[in-house]
Amino acid sequence: MAEEADGGVSSRAERKALEKAKILQRESEREVFRLVGRVLKKPEAERSEEEAAVLQLHRDTVEELCRREVRRNLLKRKQEEVFDDADELKSKVRELAAAVKQAKHFVVYTGAGISTAASIPDYRGPNGVWTQLQKGRTVSSSDLSKAEPTFTHMCIRTLYTEMLVKHVVSQNCDGLHLRSGLPRHALSELHGNMFIEVCTSCSPVREYVRLFDVTERTSLHRHGTDRKCIHCGGELKDTIVHFGERGTLEQPLNWNGATEAAKNADVILCLGSSLKVLKKYACLWCMNRPASKRPKLYIVNLQWTPKDDLAVLKINGKCDDIMSLLMEELNVQVPAYDRVKDPIFSLATPLRPEEVDSYTRDLISPPAGQEDCSGDPGDQAEATAVQGGWFGRGYGKGRKKKKAA
Ligand SMILES: [Zn+2]
Image (cartoon, rainbow, N blue to C red; front, side, top):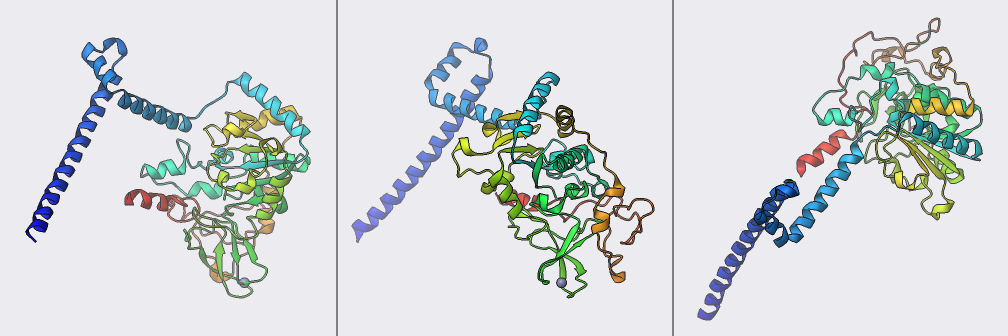
């Protein structure tokens, strides 16, 4: 018994001593890191003999700190916006034009960068929504419904009518591809369309196109829009796919169209997307094939993308600028967006009388002479900050994670 008690005491003391030693070691390691870090910051010529000796003595620490510096710089470089100069752009676009002309199945992938000219801010650029929200600023929703298809949207649509583009896959929810006149079957809106609500109780799923952002009350896992299906009375839902959700709706997501397009593509042009989300959809990149059998990738983006190393060509420029040069090379005329021809007005379903006041977001005003079929609630939404809805999507989730850490 006495022996056991003794043993207990001594092992406890040993444990304590061990812990103390560990703490002291960690502290001395930290001290070494601080010391080495300070010396490394000095230009080599200004280091004293003593300091040089410190670096000699702690070579492992020096190496670790250098590795960290490299990682930091890489991260910084990935976030920077890069612009090719005019000559470089011209020659790169010439190369792209040749690929477009030769392609048998040319497919376009688009991200927020193609809508920035429509005053829709992108997500992760220096002025992107994500960046603004991270800084605690609010983002106004009033611009979103006022946005119109950009020059790039019109180019893509024209390339489709010229039978050069076969399919468009977009991660944008702003509905601008549809409004440019691109037919539904040629379009996959992988993350939904802010103007479309659906009744999933009806079979097949019944779709209601509206002239306003239907997502103002929706958020992650909460898709009810507070309006009802005319046919069955079921609750209508938005079509937005948030971070962490899996989109299963046939339309407007059109995964079948996207998968088929990727399978047949020989050239893919990625426009204005960081590709951070798109890269996760394996079927879009044919990664199961050997590299030589995959579609050739052309990327237009100002920032680094995770697919840059796999691309045949990376063009660092703004989408509208690149598309303007490309159309010139292809000798294709691009009509300006014309609201009179915007298909959303003929696609839109009028609201029921009791639902005329069921939204506060701005209405896309119909062209002069066309009937207003949705009832305008006025300018109430002028400067509403975005809370829920597609625009702040995934943000809350990201922040919660950060807080927990
Ligand atoms: Zn229904």
